Image (cartoon, helix red, strand yellow):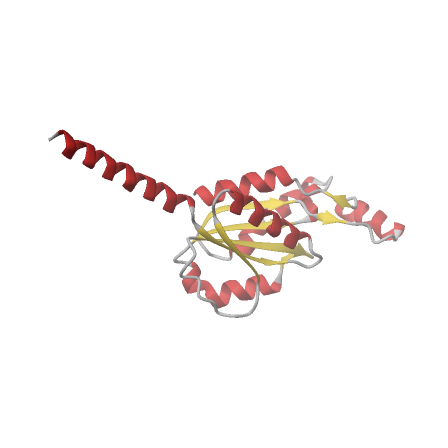
Length: 188
């Protein structure tokens, strides 16, 4: 009788271990659109953070293609913002894959310079961009990250950017915030 309980306990421990292992080893796809490379660098860092936490991560630039997303537990969609608009290839990807995406757990992030603006109205507008990207998809999380906005060396354009948009060239990416968000999303 005692051996029976020991075997039962061992079987239960093996089952729990398998469940924890399966929970930890999720397969995540990160689809992104980047104009100048800042969003791509954020995606690469997310992959590093998530694989270090035993996740399987594939990254893919957004294209106007239908893809098989059946093997993914979660999909993270990231888009750079330019001229108050999401990356067009990200929007094409979502539209073409909408039916399948609606069966998945989706998180969305945008990379936007105006989130660092000295003007509240510009920051408020930047906070609406994740909804533009989600474009009707049900999401488990959405956020805005500041990007890298290097100076092009033209003082007049830098001055106008500061005057009109309230932004100053620089790298405003918060790698700690990016890491925390990616890991938090992987657990949802």
